[in-house]
Every structure is written in structure tokens, then in C-alpha cells.
Length: 133
Image (tube, rainbow, N blue to C red; front, side):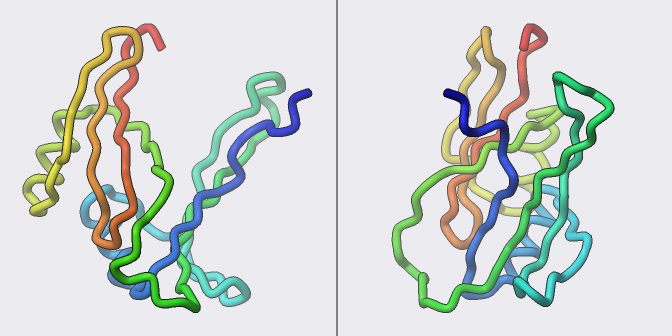
């Protein structure tokens, strides 16, 4: 039984959403499209086509939302994987922004990977797919 057919969104919670939005904009180039006053979030969307029916356009929401709880210094769980076009360029840019790259790895079957954390401690995995993927 296949109950899930994709990812609808990624939602990060922060005690300081504006600061976190600026970091993602400056370090990873994710530029927010707007503010959602109903959800009190700052968001953007990523569009893609349905594999079985390419005429259908789908979106993945990406948002940063204020938390109603103090989460400062508490452990984070989960990890977001961002697909990148050129790992070397992305890592060079991140280092120029003072971002620490925790680890990198190359897997010939899958591609290049790098791991880091955003200022709130959320885990980030960067992935540059190999030609065969």
C-alpha cells in the first residue's frame, strides 16, 4: 500500500524567524516569496512535474515559522536534503559566509554530499547527484 506520494512541505520553527530567513537567503539562496499571515510564516515554493502525468504541476512548500515555545539550545531532530547543481560552488559560497561544513563525502553511485547546520541547529544535507542518478 502506497499511502504517501511525495513531500508537501518543509517547515522549520525558530525563535527568530527573520534571522533564520536571512541566513537561508544569504547562504543557500532560498528567497522567500512572501508572508502567510494565517500561518504566521515566511515561505517559498519549489515547483516540479508529476512523473506519471507531466502535465500536472506540483509544489513543495518551504517555510520558516515562529514557535510558541522556547526551543533555544534544545536538540534538533531530522534533516533536510537540498539538491545542488555544483557542490564545489555551494561549499565555496558557504565558507565565504563563515558556515562550517561538518563533513563531505563522495559516493560514485549517488553523488557528492555535504553536511552542515543552520544557525538554529537544524541539520542540512546538500546533494549533488551523480550523472547516473
